[in-house]
Length: 230
Length: 230
Image 1: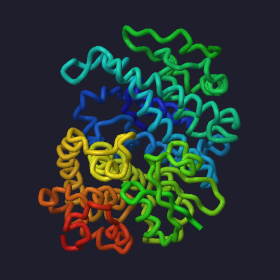
Image 2: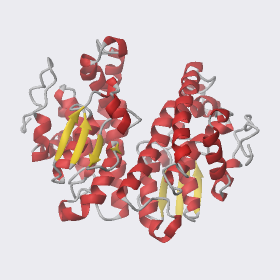
Image 3: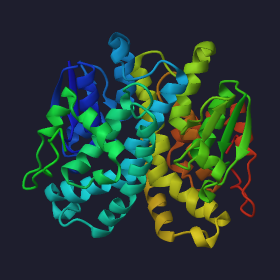
Image 4: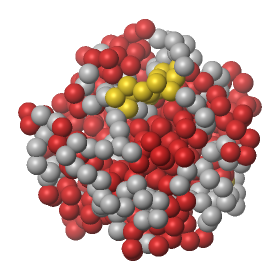
């Protein structure tokens, strides 16, 4: 049995929920507010971050990219042509580069700011930084998102999926990040039609459904969030 | 033939030089100042970061963790018991968690600040942020390093190597990061004897030698930097 420690609006937690679902792996889930640094989480992951995956009595698997490799190593071979990691080392490197771009660079420069300022801070006590969003951080995120969208647009204009001809972990990493910004109405879809069409294809997958049902108390989703024809 | 685009004091570039050497892979190297965003680098890696590895006419392999997986996939099986990635998925996850801690968290909270403020800024033009170190950033790094050292000390007190019984990529990731701080005399070795003894063992490996000969113009290495009995 798998147990996932996660937060519903942590983009890298969302990524892991998507790939667990794509790999047909059922899991129990435990919701965690990582900023509370709960003892149970720190025992599993001294870095104090989510996602963390635990399989039966095994050791904790910490962090989205480590979980990706673990799932692929333990279940990838059984997935045949639905495997989300290509076979050739060059194509694997391209998948990993794009996963790292989405969960690392894009998260750090854009999505992380939006989620922290507009979602996490609503629930965080003021004593540890909760309260009103920092307008400077939001301004940076909103300026940076255009450059990223342009790059994603360039990629999907020449490829069937983000990483190449086939669906890979890279598509779910970017979809997980974008879905958080989309909830907040922060994605400039009109600027990049190709990204919009690519996202519509990922969004229609059954693995996305649980995410599209998530809600932040007191902050309704943008009207297009759960709409498959946004 | 392999070509590595790197900077001599970029910790994740150092990590890749170490593992290329451990895997007996010869490479040509091209020195890059990533802050200059040279056109040749951006064509290979739109993220504008080093390290980037190119094998023959293959596509660029971007980023230390992607390069680690690529090297292990293409050369790991031939390494037998000198392979730096364990066989069991649980142990592989632990190796990846620690590599990510060293090159991600430790770099972001400590070593990245030290290298940028004290080394990169010496060569960067003032127009893009070069000049005097930011004392606030140095203060943060110097406060954070104690917590990390304590955690590394806890790990190596109960394990032969950082990730467990055998030498893995994790040891080289941490050694690469620490070596940059050690050049600057910024590692509080006296606080954690176990980390010091572990580092002495890694430092004595032939793969470390080229790193210990590196110099920053006008900034001599701390006296212990190249000393194997520091």
